[in-house]
Image (cartoon, rainbow, N blue to C red; front, side):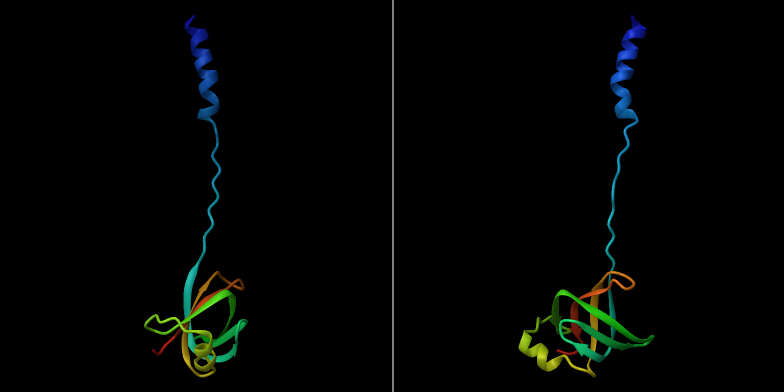
Length: 109
């Protein structure tokens, strides 16, 4: 009787004991680059002269332009203030060739 009871308990518990759990992790890298603008195509790309040389960044679907103190700039202000020769920092997501800028920070207020 004990053997039958132990067999039934093992038959019920075994699938849970050896069940495998699968988990997927997605990692997003967020970082910044900084330099002086050498080329700028609104809504498309920005090229910065960085200490390691020129680097090209592509814009994401939405890009926020802010001042060093965090004030968000409107479109008219962006058109007049963001241009070749000014120092900026770009906040981007991704790695390698898959870099998308989501924030441009002007190094002035």
